[in-house]
Image (cartoon, rainbow, N blue to C red; front, side, top):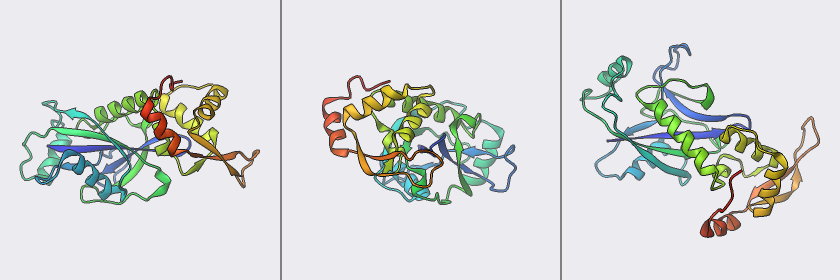
Length: 236
């Protein structure tokens, strides 16, 4: 049994995912990308294993982490390149492995990913530019992206991808990127302010080539109150 983690980040333009690479010097066209993961230790639960993998790679703890589901296809380890990797890395390369996937949301500007024991290189890749991965990790990534889109329709979890202070334009762009469609800017701003889960700060952008926008921050207390009663009609 193993865990694999889909770690999402946002650079104010694109939704990205943290991937690991077997050989850091390989040409991009030949690179074998996969999701960070590991076998589960005998003395830990699934959640503990996922948190461990996340901490080993990012150094972060107590961040948004949610179980996605189990992946148990009989041919999930059958690709020739995957078999070669398993022979090099596992004592029992033919052993069947069922994985439980998780997805995490992080502010990618808040840390520098670290090379852990299961990775020789790590990097952020735009989700919409990935079309293949090792094992069944592309399927896991697609499922995680769909889950993120579904969650966003009922709960404003996107704040986990933003820095402590942000503009409404940045928040709007994030939700558009996740949703994969344009969202009416006026309706978006009106709804966010009406829900009172963002508060305007007495601070504006500096050094920008356009009219400086005001910064906002996430109101945790109001968010928790809404979470207790349910985010009815939150979706756009």
